[in-house]
Length: 286
Image (cartoon, rainbow, N blue to C red; front, side):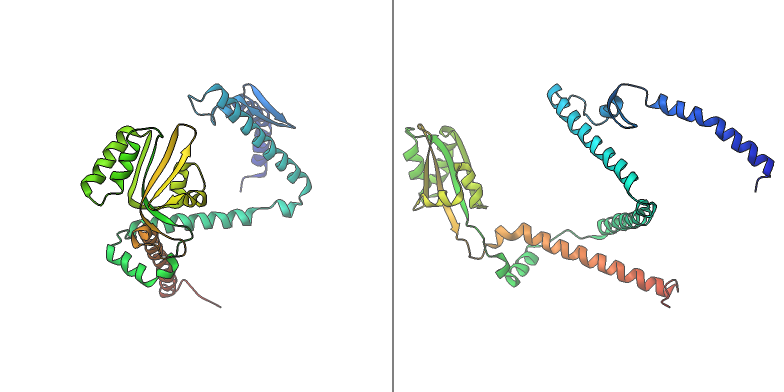
């Protein structure tokens, strides 16, 4: 403990420094004020920190307005909360401590998992999971494999492309791809992957129900304005309500398996921590 006389001297020094502290604070925030709410001031320098360099003048104005509105809301809520809440209600120390502990736990769990998680999933593991959970892979919407093109409706190559696409010969399909790529306005080959009907419908600019209603055999053809037409050749198709092919489910299954491994790691970590605490006699229940 300081002697009483020294305490008085220190108190006097601190009181003398208060005006200087206010002056220093004023110097730190010296600059153009862009907004004010009560005693709160927003300075231009604070805005400069939130607007990326190279932002266009129009975007800068929009970002500035968004930030100022957000700043005003935050300060207004803070002021009313300070005025209306009781001392006990304004004490957020417990919540802050709980959040700190939760954040530290999350960060350690992430580090622990990242150091140990095996993200390799074999084809056999995917197939085994698929075979054991097929009913969970029923389709809500159709999926398909297709080739899509948007082309002038009077193009001399339109009929040729459609004929080549519907051929069973590999060389004809390759030729169709080449002709479509060179003469169509847009050409996308989805024949090597399963896609949601919604994705193909987006190419046509319609919803998937309307698109499928225009299907005739393996072709879907829908006019695009007065001078163009969109065409899709359906290579393969699976209806809604049926089980999706394993290839379509691979990414989902891989995520499920890895998520399961992550859960096992965290469960094991919790168990090991408790067991370790018991062995060290740090954990006692009274």
